[in-house]
Length: 115
Length: 139
Image (cartoon, rainbow over all chains, first blue to last red; front, side, top):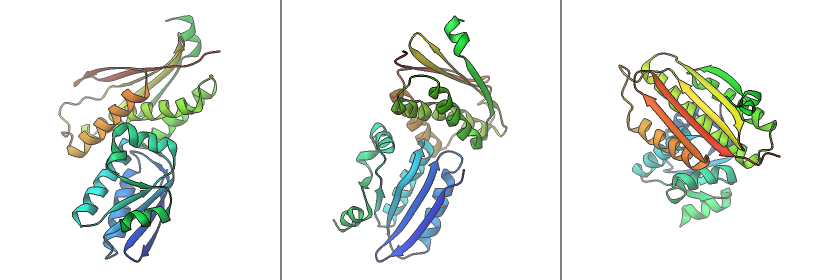
């Protein structure tokens, strides 16, 4: 199953919304889409809204780690918008909740960007 | 094989291709729906079984051929068991890169945390067998 994406170039950040189930089959779509939208903007920061992602596996988590690393190398910040208790549980188990900045909605994400 | 295992055993085979991972998750959901397993635990099992299949599929991709993956599930003594077996050789294929290693590490961490007991038996020439179980409240 393919992922669906929506992106919006905002002032100072790019907002990318992802919908679907991220697994080994389609995780590369996320990597490619983030590469594409971040090349298309001067904004170094990315707000990645994954509230409509119902499932993510280790491949998807690995891709998120790579995205965070790449954005940091470019001097930017990655904020994840995430509310699914299931996915937060996976972040917690893998220790990624200590590495990623997570917000519950877009407004909270923007506040974190300002910090 | 115990009578309970015989009466509850379901087996499927999938090719070592990631497009079949969704079928695996549907199997877990479908199997669990026949038994009194809480939804949150069904989701845990779904992640663990899918991660075990990821491991086999990534081996298959590195080996350059589509091996076969067998998934078996059954109930026995208040546990639900899932066994994931592949016949994919790790010799002669591409070496895993750093990203593969990170993902594999995360995958096994998830399996070990989400299931009650995990047993891995791996042979580089003949394949891997991952047996995992989780306690359930059988009425």
